[in-house]
Image 1 (cartoon, helix red, strand yellow):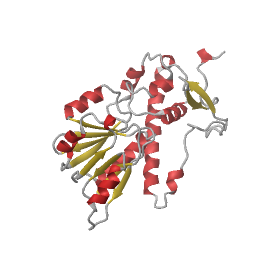
Image 2 (cartoon, one colour):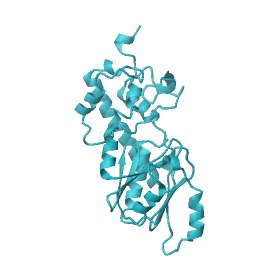
Image 3 (spheres, helix red, strand yellow):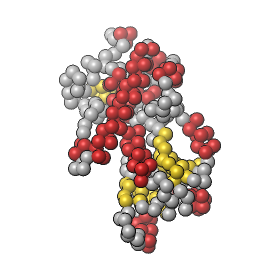
Image 4 (cartoon, one colour):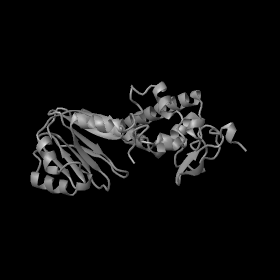
Length: 281
């Protein structure tokens, strides 16, 4: 599933390659993923210029020159493909339209095409600035937002009676942290994912906050290096502990263990992420 680092990689490339260009074609094959009819999206988006591309959580937001926002939400298995059209070549419109009709999503600007080939849960929303702000207020802040200070982070997590992993993945608390990054953030903070948040002390919450920023920023930097590598060698980099049951902990060598939290797997090192003293038998 695309997480914040992957979506940020898409955003950087889209902001670099599509800003200043006009939307020439826009197709979406999943009506259930639209908030308004496609005809209205065409009326308000086709021919409009893209001013900039923003990321909030895992939402990609295209800001248009008429004040509208196109919000693209990728699903669990979705992958965004960004392809540059050859300079000086004229696109074969009938062939391109036929190709777009086979994609779950297709966006064509002056010199680029953006597609999602297959999807079961992709969403495309057309929102005004006010509607977008209202929708964002119903979600938690972006974990990397400059407005989310350590103090505000502590306030959001204070007295939460859920497990640490559930809290990190709660979209009402934080936007865009998936299971993989929740496990890796808990590991970086030295906290077991099953610990109750209301048992954490202020210093532990501060450590969790700093670990969240570090893990996400490091993943974004790895994503950048992967895309910059001409031979693609950076794409195979492995890091963190998520999904690595039985493999040695990168810190101490203890085998990584797996537990179930709300019937979903969570990964941890029993040595580096000990239970709190109050929970030890």
